[in-house]
Image (cartoon, rainbow over all chains, first blue to last red; front, side, top):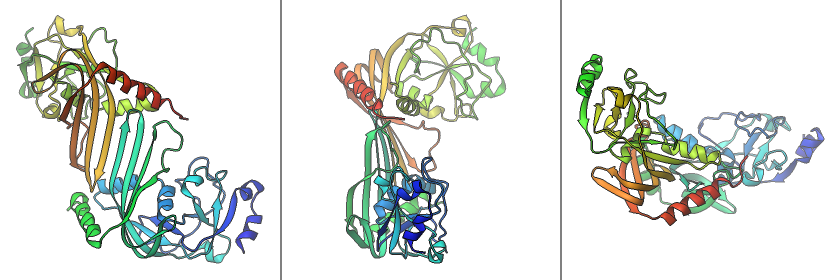
Length: 222
Length: 224
């Protein structure tokens, strides 16, 4: 079934909050390197006000948006470090050309994350495979409470095996680094994922390996 | 009863792991600026391994030790900010010269906090008054996790009405800022109290006011 026909089967309120967009590069990130098949579903990490009626695989047209949508990359990395592992995130590139874009009425922070969905509109999307095109690690996290403001920043070190869209129209093939930062009064609404890109630069394979080795040395228990 | 006599009457574990020492000064810090009388007690905030047989008022001979011993100054301040409330701590100056000093077998972090106890050994210490000689405000709490190494830095601005021992033999009066730091491999960090003094910076009444005003302004922006 075409996505446009699938939309017609939804309740009015849901349908009005969803649009269809064409995208050639769309990604899902996960610490699981072995996702054999993706199955659209409603996860347990959604915000309380998010739609829970449409099964989906959440994804994004860039790595920065995927990280914003995930909303817990830096926290998960620190938890992995505490548990004695490096905490690699794997970048899966999804194989479709059309996606559902939820509007803020359906996903309140979609204006920040540009979240996209794969929904089960036909057998090819009900269960599907996606290949890993790269990975990244979190190398540093900083949380500063300063005179009632919270500044949260973290740095990603990436390695991609094909051109992967990092942000906007910037693609990376090889090694790169992204620093994300958010600063706001601590009681301002939307706390978790409105990070701006502070820095986005290519790096050498040696720099990536060097950081990776230091992280292994500091966190991996013998 | 003299403290030495009091120690002899305690159980083996206390007798073998605590001694009586003389201090020039000892401080207790609290977010409550209205403690009328101190009464030695066993609080709910002790670590699970700490002694629970001796009622005491926990004190330290320096401000950094008192902050480390409290172990939750930054968390309490930030929680308070989330509740849109200012968080100021009072520094109480203890009126004694002799104290009980537990070793690390009784209080696992005693070396970091320089914790001492006031115990109910006589009528003077069963219940007593202590004056507030200063106040301080946390204005910055920085947690950095860099390649698996965690660094925590806390910054305070202090107003001391009388000379206060900040650390070691460093006495300061008036307005000044204190920065303390703790650094360790991730996962090794315990209880948030292994801070060391990093820096003492002179300040003034205007800066104390400006900082508290900015905090007040920032914590009242937005919020659910």
